Every structure is written in C-alpha cells, then in structure tokens.
Image (cartoon, rainbow, N blue to C red; front, side, top):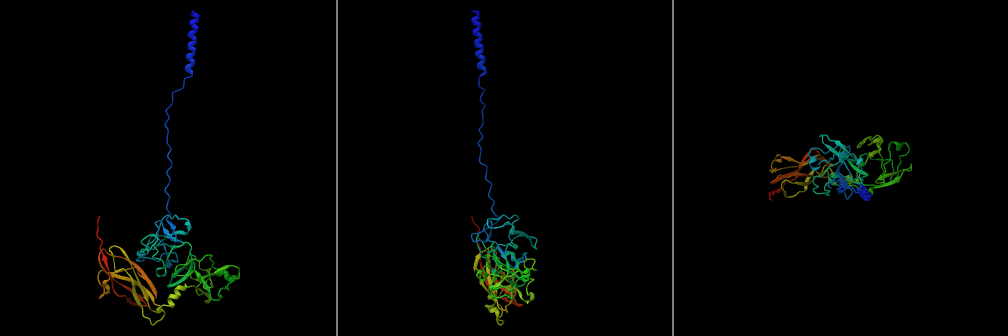
Length: 382
C-alpha cells in the first residue's frame, strides 16, 4: 500500500515537470511601424528654356534679346540704354531640352555688374515686354533681336557699319573675283579664306533666308552663298567681331545685309538735297501715373545723315519757348538716316508731361514738334 502511494506521487511529479518544460514563453508586444513614401524632391525649373516659338526665355517666360553692337562679346548697352534693355544674369544656369549649358557664359561689364551670355552675346530683357511671351523688342532699330538657339547668320553693328557674321560673331566675306554661284578661291586660297557652310539657314527678322543658297566648290566642299555669292571666313580674324579681311587685295569685303542697303538707297536720305528731319510716330496721349510708356520716332534726311545723337527730351514744364525747360533725357541712341527709334520713359504720379524728339544729324540740331501726355492719377483703395 505504501509502495503504491509512493509510485503514484512520483508519477504525478514527473507529469508536472514535463508540463513545466513545455510551457510557451509569454507573448512579446510588437509595435508595427507604418512606412511612409519618401518625399519627392521639388523639380528644379530651368533658368532658361525654349519657348514654343523656339526663342530663349527665362524661367518665367520673359523673352531674352541679343544686341548687334555686342559683336565683340562685351556689352555696348550702358547708362540710359539699360533702362530700356535691362541685363539678364543668373549665377547658375540650368537649361531645358534643346539648349546646351556650355553655350552660356558670364561676363563682367565695365560697370562691374555680371551678365549672362549666349554663344558670346550678352543677354537682355526689353522693358516694353510686360507679359511672358511678349516680343515687342524684336527688330528695334534693326539691331535688337530675340535670342534664338538656331541662328546660323546674325548681324553685327560696329564702327557705324552693319555686316553679316555667323552665330558666334565671326565675320563673313565676299570675294569680288568669284562669279555668280561659283567660287574662284581654291587650294592655298582656301587655307587663308576658309569656306562658310551651314546646312540650315536661320537669320534675324530683317533678313530673308531665301537670299542664301549652297554651291559645291572646286574642292568638292559645300559652301553657303548670299545673293548667289560664296561666303568665306578670314584666317587672321582670330576673335569675334574682327574685320581684318576688309579690303584685302582690294577684293575681299564684309557684307552688308540687303535690307540695310535697301533702306538707304530707297529712302529720301539718299539725296543730299533733303534736309534732316525728325518726327514722333507713336505715343500714348494719356497713361497711368508711375508706369512706363513707349515713344517712337523717326530721323530722316542727310546724305544719308550721320545721327550722332538722338533722344526724347521731356519734363513737366512746356519747352515751347525754351528747350532747357525739358529737364529729363531718355536713352541716347545713334545711327544713320533713315532710322526709326523707340524708348521707354517712366511717368511721374500725376500731372502733364511735355516732350520733343531731338537729334543731331550731320552736326545740325533738329527737334520735333512738342507733344504732351496727360497722366491719370490712380488712387489707393482696399
């Protein structure tokens, strides 16, 4: 009996021990961490991009321009000129598709300011472009043009001469011993006068692409022609804007755009009997105060006349009796007659301004009639 009881107790103990060894460990509370998608980085807008019309604009869509007088690569737009043509500058240039960042650079102007360049041409805005996409500066005075990436021909204006250059400002020449549609420069001649050739011709708006063609010269190379005459570079023109080939052997000459020649030969300025004249062609008779307005005028006459200075003189007091009553002067411009000019002036907040166009042609001072603009004074409100 005692033995049976002992065996029973031992059996129960073994069962309890086995049960204790097989117990599951307590559950561990786990916190589920929800993963959130990584934030997408903001897409950087390019500093310059191509418009739908294939011209260069800034990140807000404002049109950028080139100045024919900047052919040397420095800016010839200074002082009052910058009121009408503000400079464009971005320290870091990022570009959209269709543009190459290597085509953009930076110059330090004579006034110490920095300016962005495209293919060596400084870039500007036009103050008359009030909205993105405006092109009001295109063709102004035949020396301001929208910046396009595909120009193959451009216009330079230097030393009172307009002439044809390539997109990077290298001067192009004709050879008077060439025949229409045929080059007579070969072998060693072509080492000194390399051919100019562009597959696609894109020109400023005052020129016609149809005036350009292509020939195959005696060496089997393709060569672009202008008015059927072959085009060349000059090997000694080492920097943009050089015209060292002008007059070489009395047979090599820079090329004036046909549109410029036509303006001279068909204008009254071509006859010496026509005295210099000046007239205002466009201005607003009234405008809001503290805004910019645009005035256009035309200078004619002379032989053709040398316009050494022209501008708008204006002030709040009529200058009918005394020209010195016009206390303010717009941007001063130069050129040759016949030529049309445009400038912007900022109106005061109220009153009336009086103005006249002024020019010096062949050393003679000429003035337009006096005009006035009534200023609409805008009141504040909520």
